[in-house]
Image (cartoon, rainbow, N blue to C red; front, side, top):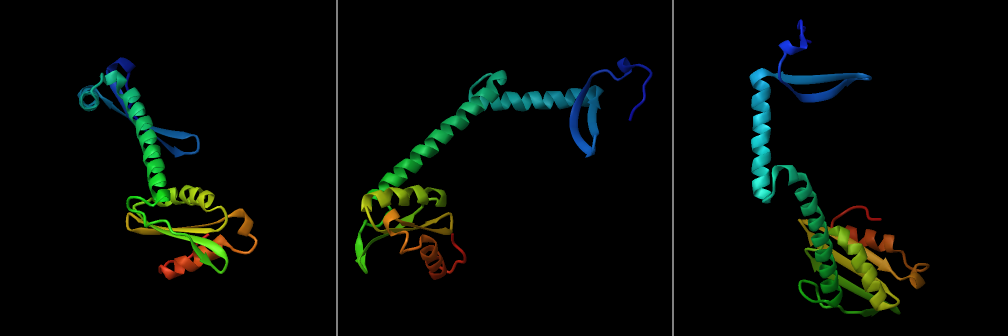
Amino acid sequence: GTHVERTGDIGFFKIANEAAVAAGVRRIECLTGQAAADYVNAHDAKLSEMAAVLKTKPLDVAERVYGLMDERKKLEKEVAELRQKLAVSGGGSASKPEVKDVNGVKFSGRVLEGIPAKELKPLVDAMKKDIGSGIIAAVSVADGKGSIVVGVTDDLTGNHSAVDLVRVASEAMGGKGGG
């Protein structure tokens, strides 16, 4: 550390970094004098630049960013819902919904493009409602990754395992696992 006779000798200072060194020990790094002023001016310039990009005042940048994040979440949810409706109806990039009878059980398999893995389960749940009683399989490729979701309606879960069907489908696609 630095030793001075009076704290006034230090002048203007700015804490630049603070971290844990050990249990109960903190390291605080500060800038003083012109280095501190340059540091603050650089941050102020960056904040002003961000405010200009966001078309707001520097003091309102955080509020504007939070608002944009909320708006993005809403739009992502809306896009997911629209993709689900489109896939369930068989329009757009989804193959035409077709229900087949396989050994006395209704089966509908769908190949979907660009549907993220996290959106497949609600999609399959919606398709299970449409089929009434049966098995639904949805395969999607998004961002270069293949995903498989299999849904078995409640009345058939005693005879058919969605987990086993996912494992078979995964192996057929060259993957491992499934659950």
